[in-house]
Image (cartoon, rainbow, N blue to C red):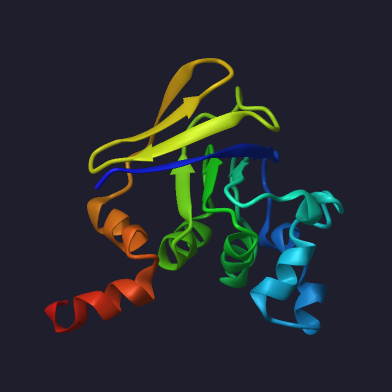
Length: 168
C-alpha cells in the first residue's frame, strides 16, 4: 500500500492538549463532531475553524494530543476535513485514537515546516516520508506498523473489523 496526502500546513506548537483541540465546554451543547468542528482549536486561534480547508494537514511540536483521552478530539479533526497530523511526538492515547478513527499520525521533525507550507505525506509499507515543497527536503518519519497501516487504509478500526470479519 502506498498512499499520499498533500495539503497546506496548519502550524501549532508543543503540548497541544485535547481540550485545546475541542473545548470541554463545547461538548455540553453537542457531541456531534460536524457541529463541534466549527470550534476546532478555538482556545488557541478563534479564527482557525473558519479557515480550515479540506486536505489541510496539522503540524505541531512535541506531545500532541496530551491531556484527557477523549476520542472526540480525533473525530472533530477529521470532521473538519483534516486527514493527517505531523508532530515530533504524540500522546500515546491520542496516537491510538487517531489510528482507530482513520486519522494519520506522523512522527517526524517538524521545526522547518511553517504555516501555509505545502507538504505531501507518503505512506508505504516500510516507510513514511514527508515532502516539504518550500525547502525541497524529504523528511523520514517514524514508520507506522503494517497492521496499523491496514487499519488506516480501511478508514479506522470499525471498518477494519467489519471487513476482516471472522478471520480475526
